[in-house]
Image 1 (cartoon, rainbow over the protein chains, first blue to last red):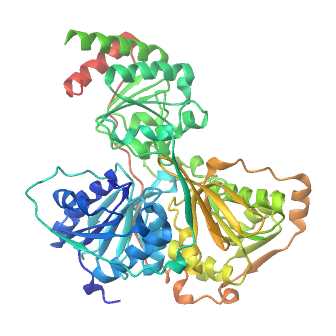
Image 2 (cartoon, rainbow over the protein chains, first blue to last red):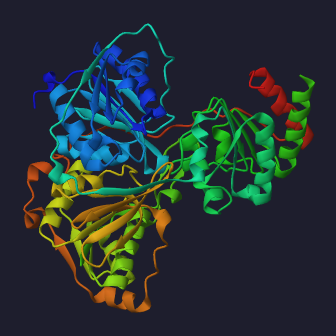
Length: 334
Length: 260
């Protein structure tokens, strides 16, 4: 493999029903940093049906070049259709880095694509940097978040990685940015289209997105279903969302889409309340990047206190109602 | 119908503790278990077997002691077990792992291949789709339920961020299974007795006609550059005071930080 023929940083722009997903814009921001460090370009690759009108925005978010693959075959995400489209575009454009959002789509196409390209893929990276020898350093948690590993893919191109939503930060849009928009038409082998999508169902639970919340009020199993009612009241006063540890989700108190942690969501709000959460390493992996963490726990040795900015040793059931009351008064006073 | 289920023996990562002073892993005494997603994948296969009749084979790649999870799978109701073990497989990343498993699978018969979505020690969710690509068969990942028409067509309920999808494909097919769709059965007493006596087929690199340049560390495009513990973030202030005072401290801190 002639490594030097591969250049530039490509981001797969995931869209659903023509809505560009937030993670794709976050990745464009990161791609911009990496490309600037390498002195190379950022390519946004968007695939779907009638998606061309989205291209200009991608330039405002940091792309130098947008490749649009517009085809009725790509109306809904199906593994093979998308893999063929992306594979052919990547083979023709030869980027040195490919970034994909670690969603149920990205984590489906990523490995399929990497195997077709015979290259490496590093999943769920939390940090991406360029090394002195211009390779991509991909850092990710392993062992359930207990250990961090930095992975390299030195002898194969492109270097591929997926990143979970909420880990990187979007740039502000810059309307003065200019870039090129191109179209790419793959030669589809329709004989390989073997999976049919019969139905897509949206459920109520999908409506809140804790990764977008500025303030999260998070509870553990210790809070109990009665306790969560109090947490909701606190969240209301703070204009916050309620989230939870895995224990509370497994106990059936809170729905899975509000779970923070390794098997839930990665969040980085401005303010995170960890209430009655002991701080299992899997939970910490999903929230420790929050700007300011307030923890309340009875056990003064609970691991949550190792990552909190403000720790209160005490009883959640006493402190939360008091705090809600005081905050409500503060609000009124303003 | 023939079903092959790929399983992995993993350390129970929920049992791993961190030394709070040094930030290093304490791995001693951490039990090995069958990876949870894989176990639910096995349950999917056994449910299909109960309903339609099927021959279920479990396969794992790992050190000789991975025999334990194969015996557990046999005791749950699998019919046959294959252990892929060879020093040449060692140090494999996901691509090299999927190459070894795909080579072994090429020597077996199957209508359906089931894997777990991801293993709890790596959480990559890559090996299943990569196997499907090597074998040139379709994949459906994040499967919650798999139903069968008794002939050749599978319907799969796939979990997404917004809800779910129903997808359909004919065999051969690979599905990767998540834990929310079922509760794996327990081993039966009869199963445990029989599992002890059953033979586990052991295969090495030479037995599966694999291209050795695609196995193990040598066949891995990704390499670990360095591994490190996260270390200990310096903890902030901690107060052990009466609730009234605690609330006062929280509010003044939040004001100080301009959060409220």
